[in-house]
Length: 295
Image (cartoon, rainbow, N blue to C red; front, top):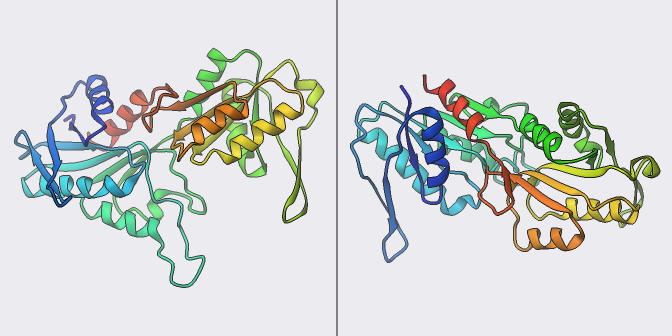
């Protein structure tokens, strides 16, 4: 049975796309605020005996998470057969250990909050850091959608003579995977640290790649500082204006404008987070994951 796709505010387009691909329907959820700022929530149609999939990408999560929790808990109280969550961007993955005494390990707390009200979770390339999988903190079934094949296909289709570029050694594995799928060469920038504030970055074999278009790929573009610095290194080395590709385009503050001003030739993201840079659609792969978790 295909679940009813129920969008939280701002997620109506993704829910409609998923319903179309799955051959299902969308539900209506009234969400508003009382004068004191508290949330009012009401299902517009009966949910008893029905499978539901809430749809809410969790960038800027602190204003979104309570409505998600309220919606899931209310659906259970009203007799829904199951309640899942499609969260293309999954927040609170950064703090995965206690670095200083007294710190909250928010990734684990957040996971317990969601798992207490949900039957399953679908997300896209979560920023796992030191964790091997979501199963380490999520006690419910999860499905992770990987975007490397989609990004590689976009690069192969749109970019002439692409060169995949990793800003540092930590990005090497990700860049190699995308490059192999796109049948394109790749390089990883080399850093030489002479002191805390003295870091020189070199571009390997610059002359060999001058007729290629550099493509920077990263999973999250938040402040954009890593990409901005990398764009600067490439342009100073005499290479073409690079294309910047991000899975999750958070673009905190003026990050998007700053990346444009830094000399990026084009900025591309998936629609995991709604943004004018969206060019890679995740609907199909998200629908496959929903189908797998809600047979």
